[in-house]
Image (tube, rainbow, N blue to C red; front, side):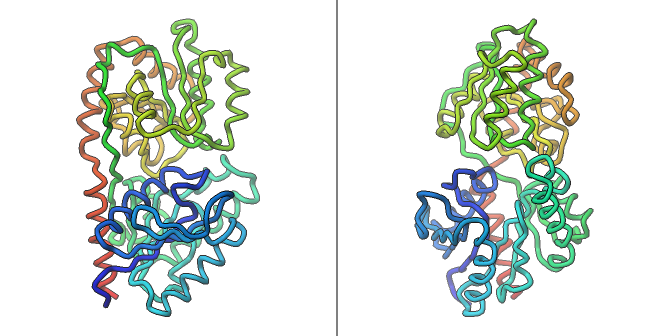
Length: 372
């Protein structure tokens, strides 16, 4: 057995991909730390225009194996060949889009990271033939991964896996960390009437719920601002909805911003809104909490793990515009409530640390390596 652990990570995208999201942040933060500690880490991903086929980033080697139609078969072939040559000690498969089914062909032990599974929420995001393919592919996970150790980033995802047939004792929950903010955080009662969304602009994120909620309380908060931070395929539709419901002049689509700019926008707001139908964890929830901003989110898998309802924010029924409007309105006008939640949110965010998360992952990978 090699002295330095040699890890192959299978994830559809890397952090520089134009459609990178929370899963890519998790992979980069965890495996970048392991690489900087001396681990041999290779990440295989899809290609994108302008991206080199091979780069080194944060100590990791990143191999981009082609556009999406070619990527999965190439990733499988590369994994099968390289593990049979003894190149890697452990294969890490990230389950957050299509399964790779790596236990079928990897000659090295596999550890699966479950960010989240789409299930029926796939039909909110893509055309039904693609959604049906994802749904059907996920149905085979219990058959092919039953003996594989899992790392789940939330309790909700663990319960989803158990409900699908993965043994509970094969699943370890390891929460994400966050990048600690480097900015000064203003007191809650000094913040203006502003609500922020941070994340991918995709249909299943249901950002239109925020726009409709803000429109419904426009008579009470006619100057309240809406900042939508992120990029994605749903932007044009969301801009049209903002015009239709009458909040376009108060809504700013920021696109991609730096971490410091994101923290500045979050710290200026009285609420962060996460109306998504499903998340693996809710990384943006903790990022908002770290600058003392309470979160109003869907009572959905992942988000119900990261939001402490009534303490660090509020949970609302899926798609319930009236409840979202009520909870956001309370934070916009009630300094005492917002101040209490802001303090609780800041305190709760301190539990989440990337160094701790990387150490936990290292233990799981070493255990799989030694069992082999």
